[in-house]
Image (cartoon, rainbow, N blue to C red; front, side, top):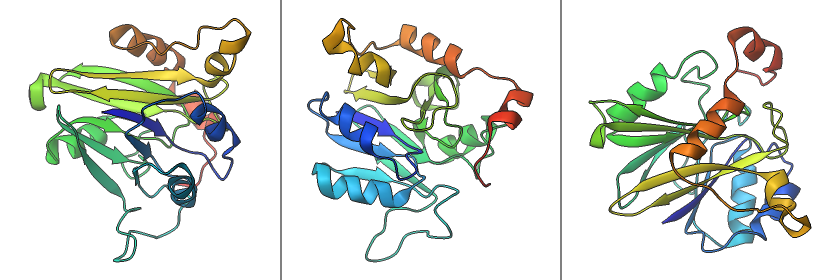
Length: 214
């Protein structure tokens, strides 16, 4: 599978449409919330399967019979293992990844895709309680409202029976591909180190840069 992960679009979809024109062979789109209605609109327009969850700015909606998506979290099945999808505000991701870990393990997941911070992160953590002994934390960041100085980002996740890879891709890199930029998606551990650097901020910085409602 090739999965596009986006989130925190906040009713500003132009950059999503821009990067969509550069992508091929997307099997699934994950939207990490804020706004849920953005995900619903994109699903109708792009014509590919979506999984989306409720963000802190999406009100009290938690799914219904006519639209079972948009709840607090979802689990995506892949060839390699399960992915937990959640916005992250209920897990207090501005302060710790611990609650994300507990929720992922409770649901038998090897990876968690989340949002809320508007900062891209990819981390692989050795965890004997996780399937395969590795737990992935993936935040695609935000395309229209990044808080990591990146100019906007999304994530690409590739899965097969043998491997699981994820990378953050930066909007400016992709859009400059026709003007001399490579636009190449990098995968694996090196991508994780790069994205961790861009998203590694301190507690005080988190407070100063955080503006969403809880």
